[in-house]
Amino acid sequence: MVRRDKLHHLPERFPVACQWEITCRCNLHCVMCYTDCFNRPDLIRQELTTPDMLRIMDEMADAGTLELCLTGGEPMIRPDFFHIYEHAIRCGFLVTVFTNGTLITEAAADRFAALRPHRIEISLHGLTKETFERITQGTGSNHRCLDGTKLLIDRQIPLTLKSTAMTLNQHEILAIKQYAASLGSVGYKLGEEMRPELDGGAGPFHYALSEGDLRILNQQDEDLWKESCRQSRTELSPCRSGMQRFHIDAYGKLQLCSGNRRQSYDLRSGSFREGFFEVMPTFACEWKAPLASEPIHPAVSHA
Image (cartoon, rainbow, N blue to C red; front, side):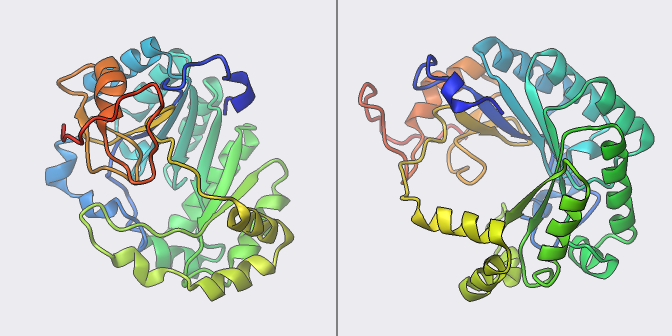
């Protein structure tokens, strides 16, 4: 991504980076997924159309957005995925794709190689077939994910593997990390946080590790332990979501971040500039500190 020290000349409020949840549809049903509850035909039909997505993307580029992360659900399950992806590349965005890797075919890998992303991140929640497919609930998904990973490596696509630590895979996390290291230039990320489902359900928390189990896991690896210690020493600072980073959901709602969807601005009926610069500063967040130069507005809903 763009280095922070290269952005010192930008205004305090500027749309640097977007995470865009372009669909909640997915070919898998991971047990800890917070979007799968919206993976239903009635809600999928309400997702943004291709023309709407391209128009919003053009408005974001015109406003100066630099980084774009395409996520889901599974973003590659949209039939128009490469139309969206290639338009994003041509807009000049640094594009990252979050994917489960199971839909990466030879043809798809070739298209990524033709217009290269900034990075692709593949979720690898288990190294063995048994663990992987117990989590994804998709027969054959382990084989397809590993095949997709290899296709990207063969084309030297910048790649990161990542796992969510949970009760079902805690015994394989270190092996997954070692596997990523064996692939050469492939990075690895470990996530530990569980989120409530978009409809408010608590299903993912059934698989959350206890604080003690997380500590034991992190202590077994020097890198994981260093990162855990760094995070525990870091003082919580006021939330900066909506200042230079923002979120768009599958229905065109502009939000502070993927974790705060309480207020939204509808990009289907309004412009990105109005939403980002005029409306989003009014959105409430308990961790958000207002700029000294900005008035404190009452919280209003634009959902």
